[in-house]
Length: 394
Image 1 (tube, rainbow, N blue to C red):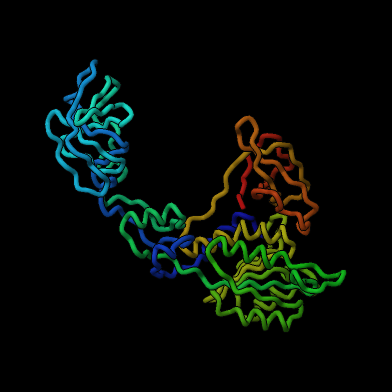
Image 2 (cartoon, rainbow, N blue to C red):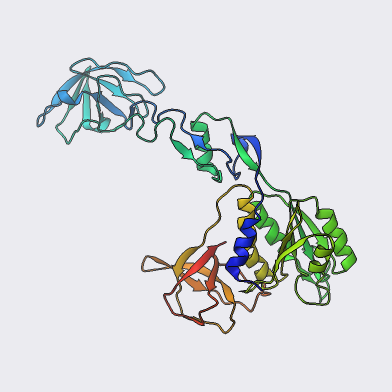
């Protein structure tokens, strides 16, 4: 049995190299950039009005008395900038380019128009008021999105702004998930008193989809022959994830079958609770994760090891833990690193963790109405109230 952080490091050392493909930006949501996105020009690309109002020359504004200017014309968005005449103003719309000769925009509410004359009351005007200057947001050639960025709705808008029609992204690795267990049934199946519906199937399918991966889902009974046949059918995948069959029971055949099929055992057993029997290994072409079978152990192992491996294999940054205080003291007898479900609450404007009690890793409620898992470190028998602990968001 190895240390939790050593196990995490070994998993990360075996991350796959991303494969790259081009996709259109309207199909890029959730994908991982494998290129830097650079500003193709200044943004704003021109001095832009941020208000509906009047573009004026600040030097012509008297300090403490009303004044009038001749309305020269109207400057609309999407039209080339005009040129301001002396002692005049140009009506301007939000988003329109500021006319040359103008350096200030007075909002329309501070004006009154009579025929061609626009009157302005004295106010706190200043040069550059209500104008977004060219290049104020970013300059041409500046980095906007680094490679490794997961593309969300806001990032797709940035891609479009930069004039991109397609973008280089990581191709998701091929993943097969094998759910093992004679006792398992699917929702909708007829069940006996000794059956359990397979929550792991849907938890792992959903976790995978959350990382942008559509896995192949497989079932296997707890027989050596069927399990070997199922694993063989998945060997063409980049990654195989199994649940169950990795402990010390009479029908826990996974480790010996993987060894028979030529997979290297990098480690088997981690000092964590839940998830101690976790198995990790690989062949030349395929990486294998052997997760325990209990639902909360599956969720914990995914969050600690599998998720960051998948993200890294697509060139994305790891989902790092955060550190928050716990609301109440906590005691444990086990010498392992213990992970427990928590929800985030707010106390006096501060985020704090509240443990959600469960009846072990097989509790069907484990993880419900929680935000993630907190760590009670191996070397600490007691966590005092307000202790700041490592916390992994689901």
